[in-house]
Image (cartoon, rainbow, N blue to C red):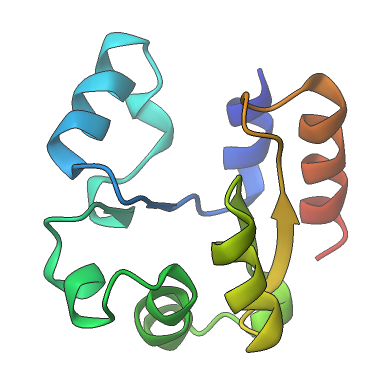
Length: 119
């Protein structure tokens, strides 16, 4: 599976405007929770996201990159929102990848795996 391949050599985070509790419940219900550390999931009720006015790029810089020791070119931000991607690109937060609004296609999953293996 895509997440199995991705999680073998990458730490996976979720930064969402949705609620963390709902995200966790959904991941659990579809059998994907095992790929995510709960501390790596940020939803709208998380203080870290609130403190940066829900700007995902700023959370990535201030929380994920600063606490992990990752370099910006070692972090891949995947989102379907052009505005969130644009902020990250303009601020050189990290490598970005914008997906279509209807979820990940097989081509997009393969491209993401390629991007992650090149880091």
